[in-house]
Length: 80
Length: 231
Image (cartoon, rainbow over all chains, first blue to last red; front, side, top):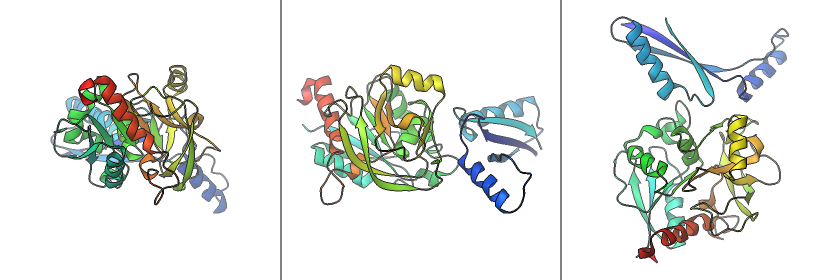
């Protein structure tokens, strides 16, 4: 078993009102140094066997088919 | 013979009964379609209703897009042959299926919006808006938490230039949608998606108006023009 992590983030040009709300809470809590916050998703995908190039290519295909909407989101795939 | 208009039920669909009722009020025969059956039952048109298919897990409409029924619906819709109306969650499913460009994201206010909403009908050439007049303002219902329409500038320019913005919000932008877009169509005009709910504005008893009925009567006119057998 290997674990592959897929990080999904809204594209920089897409407004992230949740991130903005979190940034607002940060300043209310006294975390003055916090600037912009953007919220994303992390998927941990368990795969059978080694996380070799073929497996990573499969996970990348999974990410662009289902895990991310590439119209509004970018994703990164890496071995945990 | 009355036209047969399918209404799809996904797990978590909410407005399928209201959509079927609107179809019946328009004079067509509503046909219940089930997400897990790859069978359109020979319907003449399809409504993807509002709700929270698959609990909105992952992204709204992201899992419903892969339902067995969609494997039949998507090619028929993409070819321009099958009229499809996606309302609210149905619009989100159409965007996730890439039948319509762009995506729906969280309302800029972060609040669920539930109110009567005026829209301006800007394209009356689609399968679902032929009974309206250009520029007509209609009063329907808006109720959504992830109704902010987004697309890149090039796509937005293309939608505007080709007249594919079908309805736009009037009286302020309720959810941060780019350019106040409430609904769009595909290049053939057979697929229309919108966030507000015309099916909740078809009877004086329960709706703010009966303006929404025009979407459902329009498709009947479209079908009889396409196939004189229905006339």
